[in-house]
Length: 195
Image: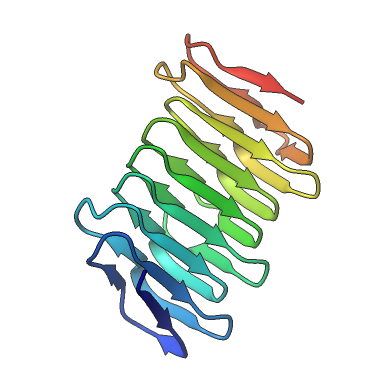
């Protein structure tokens, strides 16, 4: 598996243009002054994305469309969005695995820390998510806020939709909603919430 490592100060979007490879933002790297941090414009799949550096972007920190992608934000990794309707991580493929051990910040209206639009995804939060919507998983999957994990949302901590059949949310950490927010917003599916 080929590894692409990005270092230093980066002011251009990192474009994923192959399948089955590793794309790493090194610990001292910084991505700034872009609308998108790391993105796949086509359905490249089975990629591994490792973020140990920091990104400050307008719209999307990481956006992928492929199946079986593996996205990991390390303890030193951080993604901050500065625009509205923006997401730190957004995926559209199926069977995607996301692990956040760092810090995701997406505070503006209609923005999410993590938005997983495909099916049968797995999301593990071991770090911190501060967002308008903490995690939005419209379809089937498993979301775990692990022990030591922290999700703070000004609107909804965990949001599902009418396609949320077979979705499970397990909370072992801190999930904190703002004064006018709700903890869980679901649809008429078969979501399970275990605290």
